[in-house]
Image (cartoon, rainbow over all chains, first blue to last red; front, side, top):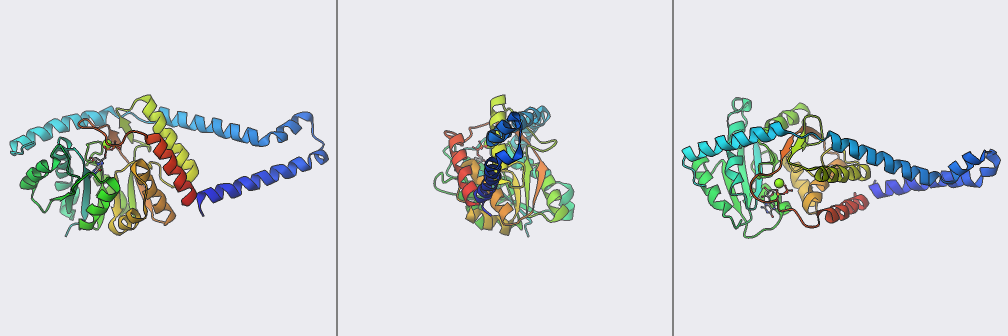
Length: 92
Length: 242
Ligand SMILES: Nc1nc2c(ncn2[C@@H]2O[C@H](COP(=O)(O)OP(=O)(O)O)[C@@H](O)[C@H]2O)c(=O)[nH]1
Ligand SMILES: [Mg+2]
């Protein structure tokens, strides 16, 4: 299925659950804290998704390895290649 | 018989190309697979580079032979996607390896690609900078953040089943690449991403190999300008169409 449609279906389903909860809020007999929690549930959802995402990107940035050894190897090999190609008479 | 065709699109790579070819010869020409029958050709698709890359190609042909080094000249800069299509038409191998000719993709990893492909008869093996022992060199913090961020957003939205979407160091079965490249319409970085996303949707198997990416030493990157904007729009197009 097209990914945008998957997201749409998921979003509508979650929204549906939330709205149902809102409509039946009275029958739950909740404390005022719990009521606000449910009232702003989508907001908490978006906020935590954003925070987790930032966390993941920060972690992945920090763990993206620098590879100086690869650069060093390449530099040496470039020298070697140039010398060898020159010896073989390549004009470049 | 040629088993592997290596496609090298070039635009102003006069300094890099001989070095890349030399390294390819070093690792593939004389490798553990040499005795078990790895045979390969190098196909260079050059878009009439102003720096006369083609002169160097002709020199390389004198040195290594026209069987090994195939030159496919085009009359002007026509972009990477069509360069692959053009190269594919002439590729004789059952497998096609695509890589950049700017030395940021080290030929030594091709041996890992081949080994990986044989492990589970993968349709595609993709080089990844983002898995263990992979990495980059010459990137500042900003570039790392952008790259990781862009990749994360794509992962979340598209779930493509591969860790490095914008890299372009890969091995494909030839018929798989032929099918994919025809169905891909994006340009730039999104093109590489679209290839893997469409492969995922079509059910092709993708193996991954860690690669290190050393920023080019010679010459200039041809991708530039509004990379972020075109990446975002390209990503959204894939989001609503695949
Ligand atoms: N034939 C051809 N090759 C190209 C074109 N644009 C880029 N290339 C080559 O594609 C590879 C990757 O390009 P590069 O500029 O390094 O992109 P970057 O690594 O994403 O910055 C290099 O080998 C270039 O020479 C093009 O329009 N035509
Ligand atoms: Mg490059």
